[in-house]
Structure formats: C-alpha cells, structure tokens
Length: 358
Ligand SMILES: [Zn+2]
Image (cartoon, rainbow, N blue to C red; front, side, top):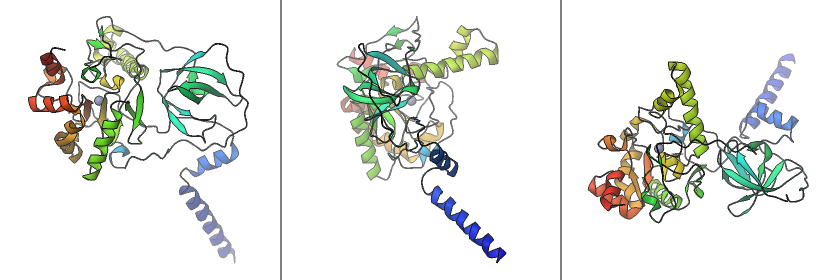
C-alpha cells in the first residue's frame, strides 16, 4: 500500500513535469506567472547572442542554434500576459520624444497579448502622444498608432560620438544601394532606415532590401538550404555601446589611454555609423565563423546571391582596400544589376564605385 502511494505520487509529479515541459516554458516560469499574473515584462521577442563585431581580426563566436534550427516566428522568451483594464491619459499637449533603452517590441494594443507591429531598436527615438494607466506609452510608429511598455523607454537622449576625422555621408540618395561606409565615411548619428523584418526571424533590413532577402531565402529553401538571418540591422546606439564597452575593456586590460584603447577597439568592432549593419543594407548569414566559407550555405550564396542583388563584401583578395578581414558571412545588397557586374568584374565595392565615378 505504502509503495503504491509512492508510485502514484511519482506518476503525478511526472505528469505535471511533462505537461509543463510541453507548454513552452520552464516549470519555474510557469509557477512564477501563475503567482504574478499581472507583472508585465516586454522584452524583444528573441534574445540572441549575436555577434556585433565587424572584425579586422578573426572572430571566434560560437555558432548559436540559429545555425541548425529553422527560423520561425514563434516568440520563445516573451511570457503571455493577460490584458488588464486600463485608461488612457488625455493626449499630451506636446509630443514627448523618447528613446529605446534596448530593443523592444512595439504592440498594436497596450498588452503583450496584442499583435507585435515591429521592434524599436536600442537608441532609436519615438514620439509618445499619451500614456495608459497600466504603463504603456501610446506612440507613433511607422505612421500609425502603437504601444510600448514604459520601462523600456527613456527621456534621456543617448549621447552620440561623431568621429572628427570621418566624412559624414548622406544615406538618402538615388544610389543609396551603392553607398560606402567605412572608418572614413560615416552616416549621420540620427539616421534610422525604415526597417522590415526578414524571414520571420526578428532580424531587420532596410525595407527596400528585405523583399530581396526574402526572395533569396525562399529560393535557397527550395534547394534545401536555410539562409538563417544572423545579424542584420544594428542601431547606431547599439554599435556605440559595443564599441565603448570594448574601449573601456582595453583601457583597463592594457592600461591604455582612452584614445589608444579606442583605436585598438576599432580593429575589432567598427565605430558607430561606419558599419553597413547601421544602414540596414547587410546581413550576416547563418553565423560569423571563419569556417562558414566551407559550408553549403556559403557555396549556395557564392553561386546565387548576385541573382538577388547581394555581394560578398569582404574578401581576402581585397582586404588591403576594404581594411576588413575576409567575412564569408557578410552579404551586402547593391541591386541585381550591380551585383552581377561586381561579381563578373572581380572588383570590390570601393573599386567598382570608383570606376563608375560616383
Ligand atoms: Zn556583417
């Protein structure tokens, strides 16, 4: 009898664990949300350990699950929070400008149960017109009304460093797809491209480029190749934070002055505004391992990417011109016509643009 009760209890516990493990979050999380159902958290849909480096030294970032799992739109880290009743404040008399403290979801309604309209990226600004009694800012997002939870926004504008030596280039030109950014050519600190998510991945590209990526993604898929978006758009503020963090690490590690440490950091992470990721024109595909050049995804890209307007941007042959080590994962959009011409000519983008006299 005693043994039977133990067995029954064990079976019961096993059933509970199985039930929770199939429900998409851990037992501890589940219990937490049962106890604190009203606690609102609004992280971005997907938290990744993506590499933010644009390296001039070898990158050894370990591959993440992005490599082997198919991209899906299913949020994995955002708990489901029941909507709570709320009142909206009167509209603000003056619009308030707010900035994202980190990448955060933008919602259709003031609850995490509502549709996700997009992501406001770290350091990028938004205009708030009202605030609800349950803590959501009503904001203008892509021309429409949307909501962002207050704790992810700040009224403090992020400081932005403009490098004295760099030339500021205008990203809004007719030939935007041929724009070159590097350590000498920097985009304005407040430039934010209009972004669209690609391949339901939580990664973003410029809205004019995203359809081409999706087309390429679908074509590769038909050939049994998954071109997982690994790192697309990165905000200026995020690039700056990564760059500053590394500068400070070098200051303490090597006992360097800030200027010397910043110069050393620039050999590993491009300063803000000088990366093609800040433009939303480039995607790191699958991972950022030097071994990517031996993978079937790379082989497919080498044969087909130009058909969709993408070029391999940083090659070993052109390192003396680009200043960047070979990056087999970094694919840059230039448009179909130019991608074909660049591939056929063997020139790098700098040489090609020079040749065109742009
Ligand atoms: Zn890249």
